[in-house]
Image (cartoon, rainbow, N blue to C red; front, top):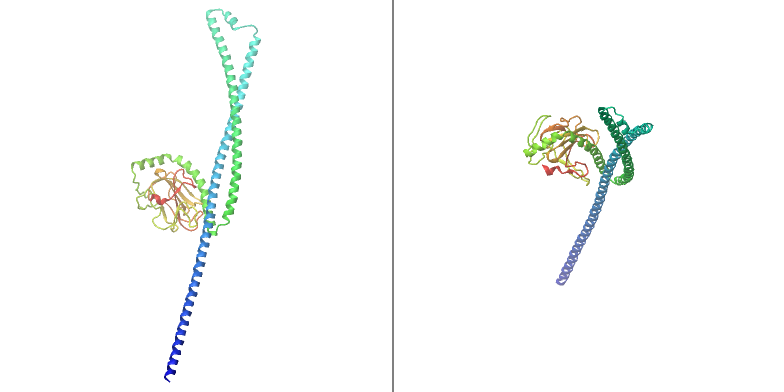
Length: 407
């Protein structure tokens, strides 16, 4: 009986050990399975992240290509504008040369006719010479008088011959200038045609690249294109305005040289605010976060700061300056103000509320003086202030700088 009990206990213990081993084996098996699943998930996640990076890289590369082509298009357009100016100048030069040539030929014809008449008169006079004329004098007074007349006639003949010779030379020079101008005009027209062909090719290539962009990227690109196009026209207006307001700008520079701290506030024009800071410029709005910096989120070059402020927020001059231009456009920059500051800086304030501008071109404004109200005009996707800072020569492609470097 005792042996039977021992056997039963032994069998039970073996069963317990076997059961425990099965449980441990099952647990280890499940743990390994979970680990394998986790590894697979991590592997898939890593592959997905790599795919995402590749997509983002391709996206950035497409945007980059669009920007490069856009810059190339702007360069081509600038060259064409320069050639148009040159062609216009050449046409004016040719018209003046043709007019000058015609006048010279007419005058030459008159002088030549006069000379021919003098020669005919001399021939018809026969053998009579200046000496015979002098010897026919009745008195010394008559002799002196006749000598004076002979001298005047001889001088007149000499001057007439010299004038005719000079006119011949002027006519030849005018003809040469005219021919040179026509050759230069032909060269300029050929260059324009060549660049125009390159421009059309670049535009076609750009359209192909833009087609690859996402909808958001296309909207941003449209905004960039409109700003670029409008900027070109505004830049021409600014050049003319800088000449008109040269005296005010010079006075501003002299004031700045005499007093480096230009922190005065002038409340004229609808309010003022002190944006603080020790830099050359202060914030153009008293509140609101920066929602876009020098680059958009997709990598495109923005070239400005965007302040997320509600429509109707007061906008202030970032420093003392002279208002160069203002406008209420329905496209691109919309309602905007451009101010020239001392030291060659320019500030641009865009997308304001239509009709809210409270300064005028040629007006001198102070740091912190209100100039307009923010809005959503032009190529804008929501109320904000677009704030640019430019340095000479103030073009869109290469002269926009980060405003934060001057705060």
